[in-house]
Image (cartoon, rainbow, N blue to C red; front, top):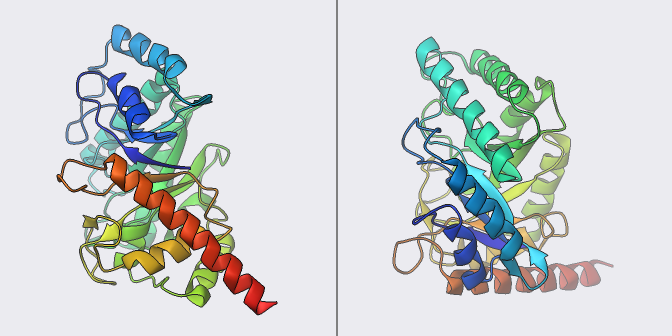
Length: 294
């Protein structure tokens, strides 16, 4: 199931109209501005209109799954008490808003430990996440892996696993795997063997992946820089992306495109078609590989 991050310009409900136009069975939105702390600017009318749109707009007979991306300002790993409190409040409000919107999950960038030890940052993240989950009831929270710049946490599946170990409510916590961040953090997945090793690492660390951000990369592997590119136009390339998403472990996980698109305004219908073609091609590659291996 492949979809895209879509705009909410004109109202949250417009995102579902755009989803239908792009034939997206799954979308990601910013329920609030990603570059402000304001989570209280969504009116009851906007919520009502969004819920109505959820019941009206479908892909065939299938309802559209919606995910939210939290503010980029949030830093759950910050050693600065003021910023940590502000981040926790913002994420808590985001989770509470998503409950009203009946959004499946909120995705969050974990943040940076700055100049403090990473172990202490992991403890701060777990504590802050536990508080956020305790202040909401149903919405799931997905921690996103990072490209690894500076003191950011989540650059490895091992670090994400350490955080998960210390979360109280494990029924509402999950992982969002960004393919560009994974590549930029140094992970190779351009052949059958490396993808199999990645699957093994996933199962032995975080256990499972709940959502995939499907992107190519403007920068080379192990650059630790977060820069998305259109599929097949970056350093990851078509082959590696096909192999990754075509693997039986990943192919059933919902995928969200966050590519710039040809107009630099975000994913377009042609990008969705291309991603679905990659998925089909990847499945065929693995079927052929499995047949040849038996």
